[in-house]
Amino acid sequence: MKRCIVLQLIGWLVLTAACSAEPLYEFGFNIRSRIRVDNNRNANLLLYSQFGEYSDVHLALHGENRLSVYVSQKLQNFDKPVDPDEIEQLFLSYEGRGWRVRAGKTWMPFGQGMGERELAKGILLSMPLWQGNILDIAFASNGRSRQQGVFCRFGSRSLGASVAVGENLALSKTAFRFIRGEQYEPVLGKGHRLLIGVDTRQVAGVTVWQVEAIVARHGQMPDTEYLIAQASIRLPAGLNPVVRVEANSRARDIRWMASVQQNMGGGFALYPQVVFRRSDFEQANIELRASF
Figure 1 (tube, helix red, strand yellow):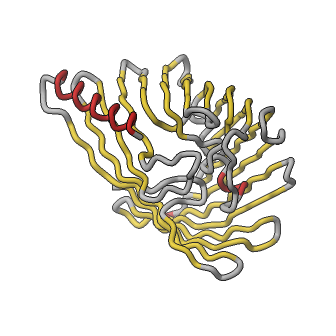
Figure 2 (figure 1 turned 90 degrees about the horizontal axis):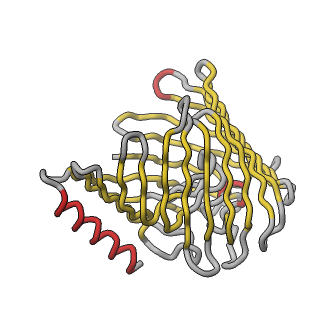
Figure 3 (figure 1 turned 30 degrees about the horizontal axis):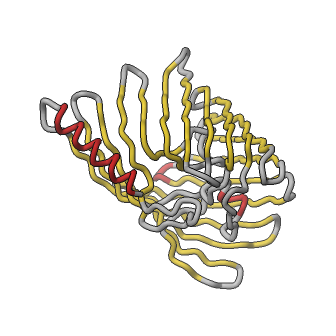
């Protein structure tokens, strides 16, 4: 936590000293608030989505020298003890001509973020290659008994391949959040050493199809495979029905969700959801999403 604060101060100092003109400030919120009702009729108000997305307040400072600082604060941290920091992201960024580099705490590149989603401290490099393909590679180290290693994704928005090699991968509660369930509790030092994935996103008319397949091997967690599929329909008046299915081969577990996302304008969307485990009702959510 102290190192993150020091990094933030250094970034502000660098931008203030190096910019010939006054830097550009951006301040905003990402809200993922929901009311969850489980099969025992217990109701809870939560400030994060069931896919491991935080609600946050964020600040960005951009300079004319292509340097920027970004910091975001979690409004509710559900990932203790893996990530006890209340800071979600804090990094320095430099934007080149089509490429960028980040240093600090940020989300690791893997697939489209539907399955493996993890925050880590390190360095991330993103560079364009050819025909719209991009290589994202990150070197991460969260310390002993936590995530360490190399994360890499190559491809485009429509098709990509990913690999992560290291220690304690997929340890976080944000990783595979939906299929693992909200009762999942990680154990420090127990994760995978190798993750390999392929992902695709295809648009056909008014429909959007997304699929991720991930193989998890070695380490202190049992070997397994994950499959994630989501289909949505973009209808008039901002109405988008969504069906999502996730499976864990080793646990022989399947969770699926039926929902309707209603865009209300002004950056707000209402997202009622019904979640099933196999054929059994598990929970219902009314989620409000907003970005401003």
